[in-house]
Image 1: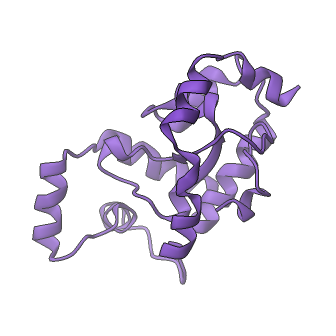
Image 2 (image 1 turned 90 degrees about the horizontal axis):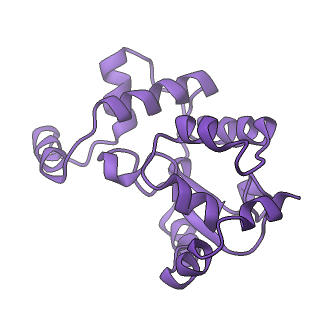
Length: 171
């Protein structure tokens, strides 16, 4: 994941105090911990985003944190590509996940109904009739384990104490 984003936060270019952000929040019952849903975000940004709709969060906070629209578009283009989507399809997928949030119990029922852990992307494609791409990059457990170090509680505490540091990271 870090290599895709030049070993830094794609929005601030910070190389330290990074958190592993789930672009589509796990709290929604969609997304998950795979390469096409993970972004190394500067800790202050991730603390601000929490489980908010990522596109709505960016629109509401780009001025506050002095974030670049072109950097956002590049980041979302990478995520779209990793999911076999166009950027506009990624937005539609995120909107669908937001509108169709699932509890843990609902997710378990869906897994039982399908007989396996069916990815939300697959459920969304079936619901919308969108054809599947030739390849979707879900990453590997090796790639995922290498990024787990960016979401430690101590780093979260440090970031929460200085919310203005995101502006400093991009200046």
